[in-house]
Image (tube, rainbow, N blue to C red):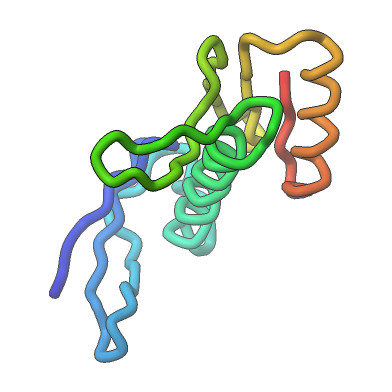
Amino acid sequence: MAGRLSVDTCQCVLFFIVDDAGDPVYSRGLVCDLHQQCDDPAAIVLKENRLKNAVHAYIAEESPLTSMTVTDPHSGEPIAQMKLGISFGWEFDEARNLRVFVGGLTPEEKTQLASAISERFPQGVQLV
């Protein structure tokens, strides 16, 4: 099987094939200006996209400051979701460091969340 992956962290489109073990193998594809000079743009694009997704999942589903557990009305199972009043946004700066925006927190909560994010994601994530 072959396909293409468009990420939401840049304009790159990666092409992939699925190997015999069922794992996708990515190739260069269509590379945006931001990643044109990278030795392995597919690896960098995937790393950035996975980091953004992991930070979003932590904020939306794991952090007690920003998430809560509710009961799914159809299955009765508990599910995590972002608390009401919390907003999430992100961008990569020119150096491709992830900048995260979380609204709806007090200054103290924001400080606590920034500390938790820097512990969990030491690879250049900044809460602004």
